[in-house]
Amino acid sequence: MTTNWILLLGILVKGHQVASRPSKDYPYGSLEKQKPFFKKLGLDLSEYFNGTLNISIAPFEFVISKPEFTFQLVEWTDLHPPETFSFSRCKVKFQGIVYAGWVYYPHPETKKTHFQNPALIEVITFEVPNIKYSDLVELEVNSDEIATRKLVN
Image (cartoon, rainbow, N blue to C red; front, side, top):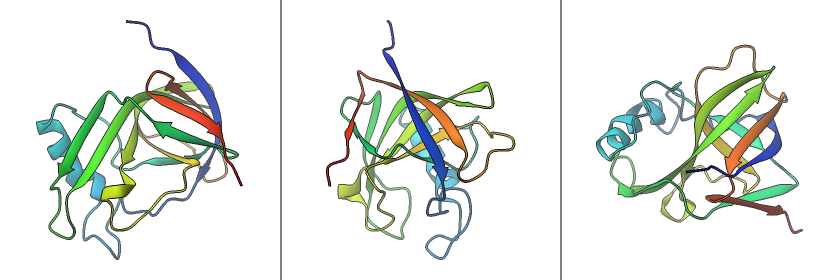
């Protein structure tokens, strides 16, 4: 099966900082807590960093239409109601090195907090040495699963 990759240019931006570490909202990193639930449902993310890269693709936004995985109403915490998550394979390129990963999409209609701008793509990947906020990154996504369009003001 051929993957139809499209290249997006983005800037690394600061996220809500709940995926990678304890925060005022969670006494744990949310991604570390979620990974065992995703593994039971068929997606093993254990080899990846316990955090996300938040990549702004503005002035574009993305729509995840046919993700490889969607997990409905996952009860991963007792701090709020279950959430739905979708995942699509991707590649991040930084300083000439390509890192395999996954677009991580917590569905906003099932989230109580931490809403994302539609121009922000969250990515789970391996630890990327030397990366910092405002760095330019290349992101390849599967155009059969994710569409992009120019943001409308």
